Length: 495
Ligand SMILES: Cc1cc2nc3c(=O)[nH]c(=O)nc-3n(C[C@H](O)[C@H](O)[C@H](O)COP(=O)(O)OP(=O)(O)OC[C@H]3O[C@@H](n4cnc5c(N)ncnc54)[C@H](O)[C@@H]3O)c2cc1C
Image 1 (spheres, rainbow, N blue to C red):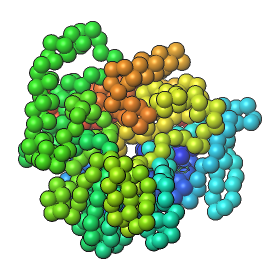
Image 2: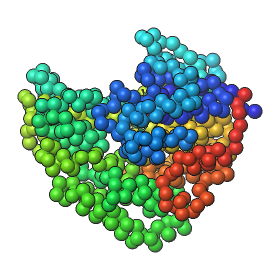
Image 3: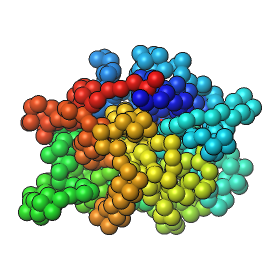
Image 4: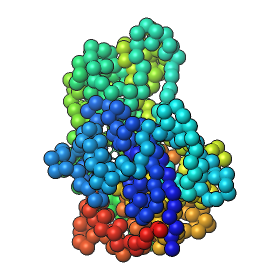
């Protein structure tokens, strides 16, 4: 008999909601904490920049038991995703489990000697403590802004300049009539640069370090989900734990794989005109594919052509008067400086002694199945397996984690199993696939199927693949099908 636990879920983004639902469904007493006034995490309206839309097509960015509405576009806008997340919370009555405006500011092992943790909670300026048997940490990878400053910033601001993190660019009017300089080359940089140019900025300059491959929503007229998200593509990347036979097969098919990716690169170069804009990356695309691979912001190349957006490779050196001086010595007039420099990964709620067990000195996370660490008892992470279909990934790991916490995985790992797997994964990321080190190694893309196969096998699912082998090989991870696969795992109730 599985005993009923009191479970804390930290965070009310898609991962927190998936975790709250999974633990609640198994009969645990769940209390969720979200420091913001609303659910949604990165999609919460006051945090989203204008015009934001998903990178994943809508059928790849959904929970297994709730499709996005039919009238949504293929790539829904931020407010639509936010409304969808709310409809999921309503469908499963998850609001009753959550305390909003309540941040978790610390956690310690329980003083009463029982397994679990005491959380320190902060709400309306007051702190209190509560004990939990298990904690699901679902705080995401975009919760703590990466704040950087450059010499001369104070004087620049004093003379009327504005400096903001990309998440603070929440109103396009900020750009009107201004010289806007965006630092960074990620999707949020290109989104903001295009948005500013479209909303009356006098000039927009995007300053970025390195050319990266960018995927258009349609490649040669075909929705990228039909070309890139499939087992047949995934097999061509050097995944972890390949058997000698698979390695031999990879060696034999290397020329074909090479030709496939050169073909894709040629297509991208021609379609996007990368040479003309001096935007051809140095790294082969198959070596770079990971969670940080951006999509092309709609209108990006058109804005370049219009002259409203200028690109400069380099970085900021310092502010001087009403300008930014770049590392190449160029001076760029600037009224608004948008620093699209990302987020700091981390789990600040953990005590230092436990954080040291979780994060290696090079920033790589020690997590089994991207969720648990044997040295951190009664804790698991949901949503740390980010991907190109993160809602599904979060739901898969949430279902895995509740079984892990209850000792109900069909393949419940021992401490030794977990440690040896963690070492193997660290070794793979450091030696065989450096691209997998992005976000501290907390990314399952482009190995969605392999990751999900492992989770389903652990859970003892009897159905793990679609019956149509062609669909299975040549189609994207289908949320409806994964709903069926999850339902085929043995069920139980805590009580
Ligand atoms: C602009 C943008 C577009 C994206 N598009 C896609 C896409 O198309 N496809 C895709 O797969 N992924 C996409 N992503 C990635 C996205 O982060 C994930 O898809 C997903 O939304 C992450 O959900 P999460 O719940 O893990 O984290 P978050 O959404 O970041 O939620 C974490 C929550 O935890 C709360 N929190 C943090 N610390 C505490 C604390 N101490 N106490 C209480 N609460 C706390 C935060 O307030 C937040 O609400 C996108 C991300 C961004 C920023």
